[in-house]
Amino acid sequence: DTEVTQTPKHLVMGMTNKKSLKCEQHMGHRAMYWYKQKAKKPPELMFVYSYEKLSINESVPSRFSPECPNSSLLNLHLHALQPEDSALYLCASSQEGVAGHHYEQYFGPGTRLTVT
Amino acid sequence: QKEVEQNSGPLSVPEGAIASLNCTYSDRVSQSFFWYRQYSGKSPELIMSIYSNGDKEDGRFTAQLNKASQYVSLLIRDSQPSDSATYLCAVKTTSGTYKYIFGTGTRLKVLA
Image (cartoon, rainbow over the protein chains, first blue to last red):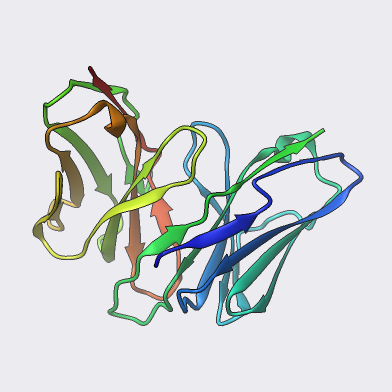
């Protein structure tokens, strides 16, 4: 099973709202990712968690706050977003990156976020 | 120079033909290569991975890797209208950075 689940599928929020995106995987993967994707663009990496610790933050604005409560769950907390933050937010997971090994990355279905 | 380059297309092929999608990368230490298919409004779906020089076949899909020339390609045989999608090439080093570098994608249109 290579399933990554994300909730909600769609989210509309105002610029003063606080909301959270959720992601879950049960493949035993120890690396989890948040990507942002705009129309006709490739996924853009935001954050990487490895063994539940933040490994990469690609200079993402603080209005996006990631959280990894355990090895299966990944959250993205949203606060005071801007209309330009409207996008498809993708969660992904992969096995731990041991040097010399190859690991496939699997995406969830995404959350379509609209900021009004 | 972009790290992973793909022709944005659209690449139009008739139904039943072979579609050939290409990708070049700049980092010589890249070790893992992936092809994702993405339908409009959906998330990327992993369809092929390749790690060694040569060909790897899976059903109608064949991935080809040439590390010396730094390119990876995807062939789709007997193309079907349902193959119409954007195909993303992704490249990863095994340096432990966890970064998968994506190309901009090639849009494929299979004409019935």
